[in-house]
Image (cartoon, rainbow, N blue to C red; front, side):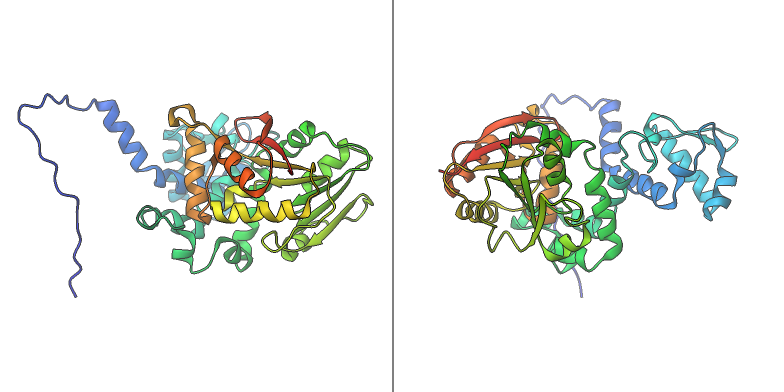
Length: 355
């Protein structure tokens, strides 16, 4: 069978058009962008075999490292040399390797933020296949993950223990100090009840309770997520409840929190979550949303924000949103206009009231 492949028509070129030849650095930059997928896999492979953690502080021989890591010495050396050309590790001609500022970020044992799990997550098979189908999103407007993995993201993770473990490590390490930063800007009165909707293993709820010794909190999430966490043992002010925010949300809270929830979903599903929250809330109760807030003009956005906007599309059919987008969703679900409590490069904390 012959497969017909279509290509865009060649644009017509006017002979008299004054077009400058592209500068060499522009060509080189575009080549680097095109080959970015190779660099992603190089970094992930180094992390997968344990290279960042194995390199000693004062330098190590790649030959001795290959024996310790039980990998091919020649390929490890070639990988390390390629990474060093991108500013990751310092590699000498004699095969010595030592850390630099960039490579230290890939250690799991680093005292500061670690990007080890981010590197592993972005190169996982399920994620890699999905980004390979970005064209499907462009043509159809649909997510790519289900298209190439035959099930949605969360169902896939539930059935893939190794990738699920990497995903959870990535989520836990994504923004060091984020739970404390969120809890620091929330005002919770004595006796108030906080419902952390989709609260995962309860890290944010615990941070909120640490700062508010007279408050109570409920972590609400799916049974599989609740069972994987530490539960509420040892804290009589914290409880857990199993369920889906697409069905209902526990009533009786004074503060409802949606932390990194809405960006996973397209507008109609995000609105459904918000409406279920509103049904559970009395008038005047507060809703706190933690998510990235995009600027309207792309040149005012951090490029990472816009990459992550596409990541939400590719994996879930979701999106990052502007403040106007949030206001529109909140108003449709029965909330006041949002108030920005905190704006950081990685995320913003916004608050609205049930009206």
